[in-house]
Image (cartoon, rainbow, N blue to C red; front, side, top):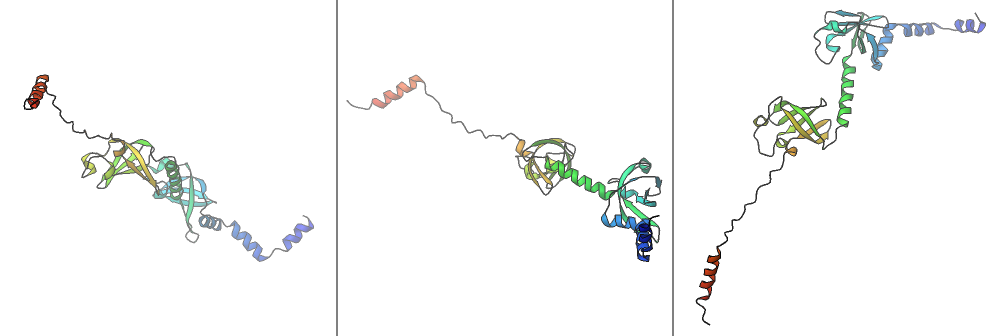
Amino acid sequence: MSEELLKDENNLTMADFEEHFDDANPWNVVKSYMENKTVLPVKVEGIVNGGAIAMVEGLRGFIPASRLSLSYIEDLETYLLKDIEVQVIDVDEADNKLVLSAREILKEKERQEKEAKIASIQVGSVMSGTVDSLQTYGAFIRLENGLSGLVHISQISQKRIKSPKDVLNVGDEVSVKVIGIKDGKISLSMKALEEVDEEEEPVEKVEIPEAEEIGTSLGDLFKNIQL
């Protein structure tokens, strides 16, 4: 061992050892992951009652079933040995508790995907969709790209209607025009795609007299004129 290395070791203080110990403590490491919201790739190594198990820094982490997905999971066993991304959301060294979650990461990815889809839509474009739900103020349409938009009751038909249910049913396939996008909300119109019914102007009926009637009328006109 070199003299310089021995000198460095001899100069180490108790504080240096404590700092090194703290850095090596896996509980302190996972606490830093939680504070920094670090995204961690893990493998689901076990399924238990109410959730799944994954190892982080050699510690046993618990992922509640409600935080494995954005939707209800029918069979947790489908997640066994699955690679997922998680964040640390709770650390308690005294109780030997480490709680992980994939939900926040999935929600952020979903938000980014939604924003990207909305950004690709142009106002004025025509899309197809399915009536997803009916409200008193309009109809929500599930568009072909998976997004949802609202057709306000005033934009459903050129004719005045009292309720969207008067002309639409849930599940109906419709064509809509994008008339506005604001704050991530898509405004649609069905009325804009209807052909405008031009009101027929009343045609004035003109009766043309027969030739004989014209002659008679002229005779009647001059018979009282004295030359």
